[in-house]
Amino acid sequence: MMDWSQWRSQHMLGADEIYLNTGSFGSLHRRTFDDYVEGLREFERNPTMHHPIFWDRADDARRRLGHFLGSPAEDLAFTSNVTVSMNMAILGLDWNEGDEILASDHEYTAIDNCIHHAEVRHKLVVRRAVLPTSPTSPQQIIDAFAAQITPRTRLLSVCHIFSGTGTIVPVTELAALAHEHGAMIAVDGAHAPGHIPLALAASGCDLYGGNCHKWLCSPKGVGFLYASPEAQERLHHIVVGHGYRKEGTTRAEDGRMLIGDRPYMWCLDQWGSRDLPSLVATATAVDVQEQIGQQAIAARGRELTTYLRQRLEATDWATCLTSAPGAEGLTNSLTAWMLRGIDVDDLRAQLHERFHITTPAGRRDDGQWMRVSTHYYNDTAEIDALLNALEQLRAEA
Ligand SMILES: Cc1ncc(COP(=O)(O)O)c(C=O)c1O
Image (cartoon, rainbow, N blue to C red; front, side, top):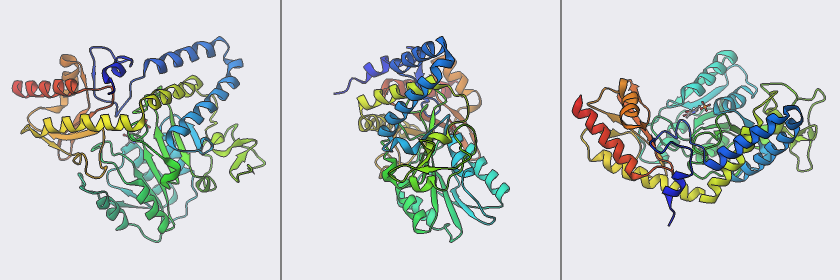
């Protein structure tokens, strides 16, 4: 039996904080924090001499991350976040006027802006798969994409786990759909690494951007872009620096593209000077989660989600947006609901000031919204504290 409270006590979260927002930023494990700080201390003793040494260590961290994500390390670029990763994917491809991007109507604003930018700049057409807010089967999502795919579709761009609802999209099936129609797929995996187990190479996804600083609990500002070897052949640098050679690319023995003697993806992320200790400490974040086990982390998230959902369903003021747990893998550790009877404008601040609870809430076109992230370092007492606080605020309203 796992002692989850032990894991909680090893994170840097303040003892009095009820932190239910890993969906925005994860909390560092103490080992990751210590390795990051120690790395900074060592680096800063001589930034010039340590620069190449820390790049070697970052390459080791990339190997550790690749193992965690089910990807050859050669197919991973280290980015600073998924916004950059998706820009590298979408803006790094060649486009012709009239090409189509197929996205859903639930994409995250920053990534949707990138899609719009490509649409305007390259005179593309963006089509939308219209998704149910709370799907009851993955097939509903696949059907919505299949209904909008055309012979001109060049790219499916889709979020793996929607931030507004927690819905998990069947990306393997969507990759197959894209390929059947001669298109590629680029996935915004902001919420997936460290939340649900991943096997990127086996998923069939061509391009997959992810964040390490949410559920994987790495230092902030660490993300990645995975590209399959075939996708790499079509991907250009969007930031050109030392990772570029005027004489072009060469080949490794396994056929993968190289620039100089480095894998192509390891050159796409050479944007000039970087915060190398944060990349290096990502290896420790991976170690921590491999020690617990990805399946165990996901199972713990589902257990807490189920508890939260039962408590919400017992109220008359919350309507869950997140699909029911167990609905064919459509959800895991993110739960969102519409809220009645409390004004959300001040709710975030009130929850923190009065109850030390951190969780997002806001207005949408259709009402007031709230979301809770239940990671392995959370527990049922924290969920009870949130529900009790909401009941109290409702009574006072
Ligand atoms: C679904 C989704 N995509 C992309 C992002 C952007 O992440 P970042 O700001 O780390 O690039 C987020 C952030 O919350 C997100 O929820």
